[in-house]
Amino acid sequence: MSELVFKPASELAQLIAKKEVSSLEVTTAFFDRSEKLNEKTFSYLHLDRDKALAAAKQADAELAAGNVSSPLHGVPIAMKDVLTTKDAPSTAGSKILQGWIPPYDSTVVRKIREAAMPILGKTNMDEFAMGSSTEFSAYGPSKNPWDLTRIPGGSGGGSSSAVAGFLAPLATGSDTGGSIRYPAAVTGSVGAKPTYGAVSRYGVIALASSLDQIGPVSNTVLDSALLQDVIAGYDPMDSTSIPTSLGSMAEAVRRADFKGLKVGVVKQLSSDGFQAGIKELFDDTIAKLVAQGVEVVEVDCPSFEYAIAAYYLILPAEASSNLARYDSVRFGMRVEPEGNPTIERVMAATREAGFGPEVKRRIILGTYALSSGYYDAYYGSAQKVRTLIQQDLDKAFSQVDVLLTPTAPTTAFKLGEKLDDPLAMYLNDIATIPANLAGIPGMSVPNGLAKEDGLPSGVQSLAPAMQDAQMYRVGALIEQLYVAQWGAPLIAQAPNLEVANG
Ligand code: GLN
Image 1: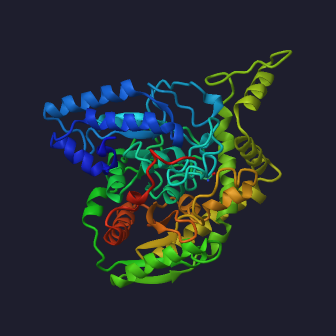
Image 2: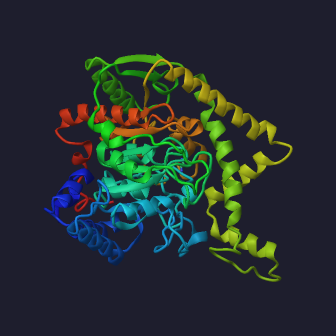
Image 3: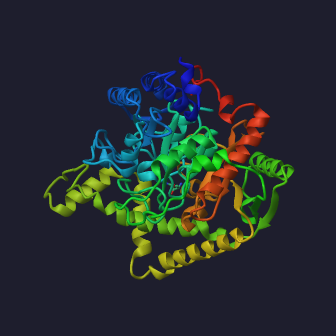
């Protein structure tokens, strides 16, 4: 097995730029490993060796001609299947889109191609990004490389397991309520949700449009920063795209220092409901920062108590509307019902067969919350909570630069453990959802292995809207402190997947 797969993307990029190794060699190494180990982790729904190697050869040819397209030129990447790709199936983990090849590339995919980054394949996910474990994928669950009997988080568990299992040096994710940060936390990798509107949603298969955001997954903070720099930027094709530049995240990582840093610990997200080992590691992170002279204060965000309830009304409401397009007429699956095939009956039969249980649950919930008699009581109230959460955050950020919380309440749970209990599944998002409701950036960085089970834990850094650089700065500082302790990023302690059994 080539040692290349264990190197961070930033190092691979340098080796490729110096022509010490070719993009073809790197891409081949990840392909060889992915073809061998994907049956263990089920990170990928779709792998396409020929197309990836052709893109790698093209990247090498451009380099030979003296053209460097990006700081990640030649480094391969895995794409969450929520992003449309014109040369590969894009299913969003749903049967209703099985085999659908979109007629166009999403903006993120276009930018990746323009950056000369070969696309290895499409990663598994909970159906339409609804879930925290990938168990709601219509194609079966992905597995956590640290323990193949456990979930790799969701909805982006295909991307997190690909990166944590070294089946890809980088991946994209989509984060509507935590689907980048939560999978990163439970697989010991890094994941960032940029400010809402920082990365284009054009060509992203929509879940809840006011919450969805695309972002990077990687094994180091610098790698995520480099990838965010590639995919971010104004896009006229997305009406919510931010017209100004947020600056270079890679620069923010390289320049990170402790000087004058003030950090807030959210009272509502630092004690109750967190596994003891996670709480202990979080306290350790805070102690490490204090030892560096960082000022830490407790901040009060009383409305966070209602965040999950508000999110699980707003998300289904928007999802029920977004998913109305899967009507068996324009694209995707079509099921002919027995008897008279009226358009309503064809639609009903298709949606009955094509959607899984979680998607149906949320469509019903969302349609109910939006119905005329209940709109004010549910959707209207949830929107008010959203404003209150924004106000809590505004107040907190008037005192501190960033907020820190544990990313996930527990380490990775066992496959099947929460499958029949939707509320238990929803509670995993307790610390990640406020960022989506407020549109602010958040990232998860590994901060150790929990004492109970030896599984990864993550710490979340939240910054004010548009201040993604501040979030990366703190992520990088925390990473530095731990790398000093462990001698390498946490991921270096992951078990050898080639011998691991699940
Ligand atoms: N677990 C959350 C949900 O099921 C996260 C979704 C997401 O971020 N895509 O809605």
